Image (tube, rainbow, N blue to C red; front, side):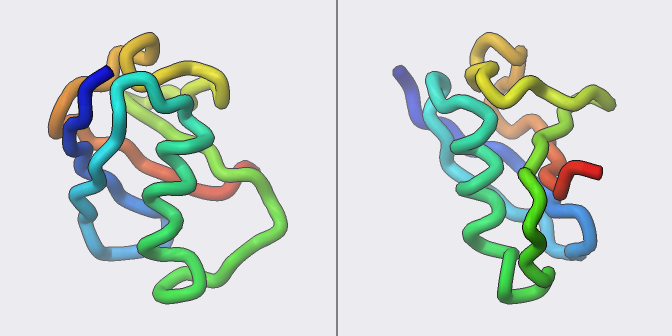
Length: 82
């Protein structure tokens, strides 16, 4: 397992984050790591699950960073499920 940074945006926020993730982290963990810096700070919390998007597709919750094809410094977008 390797630690590397991702660029991350959260729906409704203007700040681009640099978030360290492990290549074995599932998308639920990636979403939580991004949300930690945004939710209840600049974006209101909602009672809906978080989803991670990369290259225009929503990634499965159980996909790992590596299995989803996310590479160091790639951009992911995290937001609440619709």
